[in-house]
Length: 125
Image (cartoon, rainbow, N blue to C red; front, top):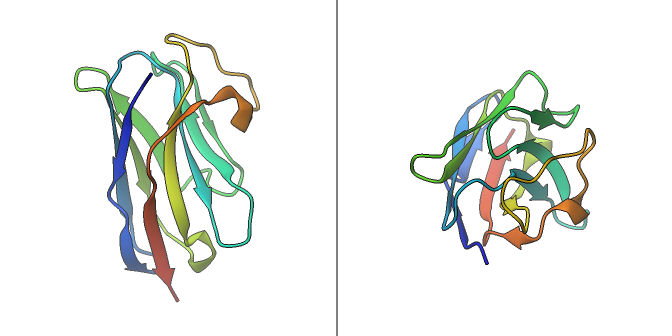
């Protein structure tokens, strides 16, 4: 089982930036960032394969968010720029259940099985 600890959330103003971090207990897992706003489903924001070869972004964050990872210290990052108030949510890091897994072109929540505790991001207008 992979343990995930996500951090880096906070209160920012519209247009500001934040960087989220996710520390994993295991290496070489394909991972992703999800977010869940009150009353809404949890949605995939970005994902990255275990070797960083493939990255996925939802249409709503393309060009503003960047996902990356450092396998030397088992940490994944999400750089979020030009944040919008509607992006206020709890952000969760997640990983697949098996190491070195592939990722579909349109990753689904079912592909991920382990979750961090979540970190709150609040964007004020």
